[in-house]
Image: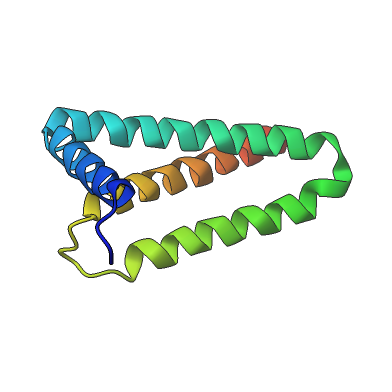
Length: 110
């Protein structure tokens, strides 16, 4: 591919982000933020879709599609891929989303 200014900018930014998140505490904090963001999105999706009973099935299908797509992307990669951290962050978001939906289901069941 041709080495343009935009390609150079993205490669330098990616390298700097990888070096920045090389610190273990920053990695853990970003994984925690991703998990909490997944919990927030799951709670927001379930409450907004639950207000209008017409959207329940459509939103459930979309959430299922997103979760399964993330699972395919995360678990069908090489074991020692350089982008492993970003896949772990995406997986933490998925775990938070599913956890939040289980919490909402338990709240409705009680």
